[in-house]
Length: 304
Length: 304
Image 1: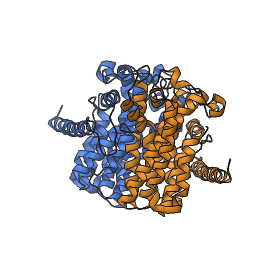
Image 2 (image 1 turned 180 degrees about the vertical axis):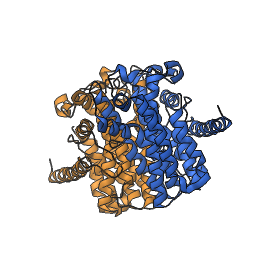
Image 3 (image 1 turned 30 degrees about the horizontal axis):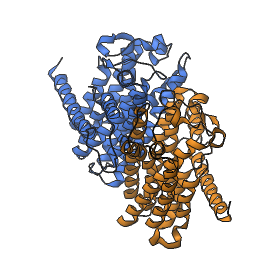
Image 4 (image 1 turned 120 degrees about the vertical axis):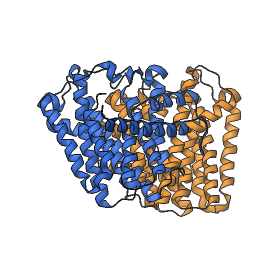
């Protein structure tokens, strides 16, 4: 590992720690204005789903996109925390017996295994709700205009037209053979939409120009494609211990990926091209974009 | 039935129709900005959960509270629709096998029975997400300040400190005997918080004074108590056909209600007192409050 990537991973880790500290504070036992109580079993299930040592890649993208465009880092941390609530809720619900039926997540029992299915459903619901709470709360120091834009963009990225719709397509596709267009739509919704939001959020938080916002969206879409392709490669090649979850699942479920259609060599070349595309989109920012360029490389080359 | 109540029920019905038209438009097949696709099976499950002929009491409260305080009726209709999305999502998830395991809702198969459990989970998730989408969307003609306040108030009423937390307490209480304080907290969260929000929303939409907002909250809390007490009475006395769902469930589950602690006479007297309290809170509005006063009576006396 080069010094360069060591320093990147240290930065990723530091941001993850900051996000976890923020989330742990938000999900403490202290009730907030207009809350009546925080039932302990539900709070425990929410914390289990949220504070489980993920890489916090989406929060990292919010924070670094905001830094690139000169927005307030404290506001970025709060929006990063909100986004991680949405991502975590989706994992809790996706793992449920009626969905992907996974018992293991990052090497730990999934929320429904540890806390029961009812609490897992409610914990996911409550994490999703909390995301919008965090954006709108007075502690998030942003003008109301930006808060409204963030609520709308996050809702669109997460709902039927984005992540939840992607999971529905994924479940419907089990045992079918999707064509390339079908796989691309599914992946753009299931994983791409939230990654795109993470990058676009930086432009919203910074009250960036329409050009900045469009650039950050395109960057987000590009690294979202890279993320999914790297994920499909890992499912094919990594072992469960490294991943902290079951691998080889795509093939076992007869689930088509772009790799099953196009082959591994194509995928590896495509990853190189996507990293170059991402860098091209950020060229006008010069060396200030070096962290986001490195993020694209990290996403394409990660081994877990 | 008096002419007076006939006219009230006609008004309730007319508002319900307006809300359903609004919701049906929002949940059509046309994708919105930033949406990638609307998968048909998920859309069908969402429509099943949302457009099922409910009384639309919470939307009615948003609309009538806004009318009392002179807010924009079009904005009120949108916020009413958003609130109904949250209420409907909670019913879809509460009916799931891992939760209350109900097959019947308003005389129809529940969403998981008709569309499968995975689609029911995702439909609930997507309806909850849609609620915040509707508030923040440009079609909702309100200043960003009010949108932010509505997002925060709805999230607090719906999440761990409100409705979802109340459902967690309810599940944890099965087979236990709760004391009066425990039952009161549970009910204030599970059903009270959303009804309170409905009334408070009218004050937010109308940019009402702090006094107006406090009054509408108190009115909402008061009729929320009446709603729950009437519900517990109906569970005890009505038959399944009238209710369109199973009755006698509380007793069958050994679930304590205030009626099991205090008796039916107490409950009926308490309902009369709550209707009077609600009227007292609205006295300063004079005859303009007649609809909301009638709403309190309707809630206390409803037979289904």
